[in-house]
Length: 417
Length: 179
Image (cartoon, rainbow over all chains, first blue to last red; front, side, top):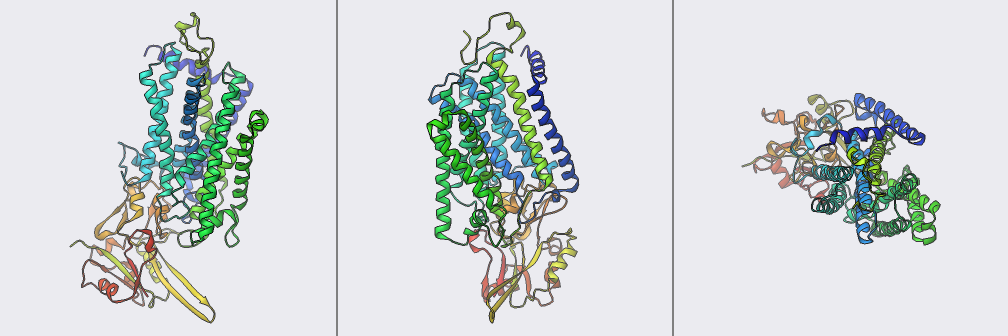
C-alpha cells in the first residue's frame, strides 16, 4: 500500500480546508458535539435518572432516534438498486455517497445505543468474539452483529473504491461487485432485525404486529433518500458532479411509492386495532387520541401524519416533484414525518400504558435533547468529513502525487481510459 | 428430580399491608425507588356491588422467560430451581429484558444494571424461606418446590382455584394466585 501515508495526509488537508460556509457549518457541528459531551458527562455522573426514562418507559428518545437512523442507514444503500435498474451514469458515485451516509447513520445508531445503556462501560459483552453474546436467542445480540457487519462492509467498500480511484487504478469488479451486492441484503437485514427486536416482544402488544418489519422498510425508503436528494443538489452546485435531474426526480417518485406503501400499512394497522377494539387498542389510542386525559403525543401523531401525506402528494404530482422548491420542502416533510413516526411514535406508545396498566407520560429532559443533538453533531461531522474527502477523489481533483502531472479523468462517472 | 421453585399467593388472605415489600427492601438492601415486589389492588363493579382483589406481586420466575431470551449478554439466566437471575457484572443496562417482561417485574438499579426478585435464592440455599414469605402476617404467601408433589405449594395449586397473570403471554409463570 504505497502512498497510504500521502493519502491520509491529503485527506486531512481536505477536511481542514474549505470556504467560509464550510467552516461555519463545521463550527456549528462542533458546538453541538460539545453541548452533547457536557450533557453526557452529567448523565454518566448522575446515572440514567438524568433522563426522564423510568421503569414504566424504559426505552425512549434515544432508542427512538436509533430506530429512525437504522432506517436512514438501510435506505441509503438501497439507492443502488434504482441506480442499476435505470442505468444512471454516475452509479459509482451514487454507491459511494450512499455508503458514506450509511456509515455516518450507523455511527449515530451505535452512539444512541451507548448513551441509552445503564452501564456503557460493559458494551463489549454484546460484541461478537469479544463478549458473550446470547445467540441465537437474543434479537439485540443479532442487532449488534448485523449493525457492525454493515458498518465494516460499508467502510471496507468505500475505502477500497476511493483508494483505487485516488491512485488512478480501476477497481476490480470481482471484489467490488459481490461486496455491493452483499451490502443490499445486509442493509435490509439490519432494518428487519431491528424491527424484529420490537416485534418479538409479546409483552408489548403495540409492537407485536407482523406488519412491523415491512413498515420499517417502507418508511426507511422515504427518509434515507431524502438526505441523498438534498446532498446531490449541493454537490451539483459546488462540484462537477453529473447527477441528472431525471435521476433526482426518479428518486422522488420512488419515495412517493414508498410513502404510499407506508401509509397503506399504517391504515391497515389502524383498521385492525380500531375495528376489533381489543384491550390492545389502548396503546394506539394513547398515540392518536390520548388516554384518560394523557395527550402528550397526540399533536405529534397528527403532525407526523400531516407531514407524511403532504410529502406523498408533493412527490406524486410530477409538477411539484420537478420543482426544486417543492421537492426540497417534500424532503423536509418526509424526514419530519418519518422521524416522529419511527422515533417517539413507535417507542413511547409501546410502553404507555405499561404492563401493570400505569400511565407514565414521558417527555425528554434537556439532558436528553442535548445528548441527542451531540450525537447528531458527531454523525453529520463524520458525514461532512467523508464527503469532503470522497468528492474530490471522485471528480479527480484529489489524486496520488505521481498522477498529478498526467491528465486525469475530466469528471465523475466517466471511467478513466 | 429437578427443583421447580414456585409461589402461591392467597388473594383471600392478603390484606395488602405491604409487609412483604418492606421485608424485601430490607433483606436485599434495595435502592430508593427500586422494588422487587409490590401490591396490586383491583376493584371490580360499582358501589354498592363491589369486590376487591389484593395481590402481592413479584417476578413470576417463568418456565419460558422472555427476559432471558431478550438479554444480549447472557446476564439474565435461569438459576437453581428455575429462578431467573441477573449476573450484575455482565449486565449492560440495555433494558431489553425490561421491555420484554409482561409483568413489569424488573427495574433499573441506580448503579446502571437491572435488578429483580430472586425468590431470595441466597436464603433458600441455606434452607430459609424468602424474606417476604417469612414476614407475611396473614400467611398469604407459600413458597416451595412445585416438582415435589408433597410440598405445600404443590398441594395448594392442586386443591384450590388457581389463576396466573397474563396466561396468554407464553411465558408459563410460576407464581400462582389462589382465588
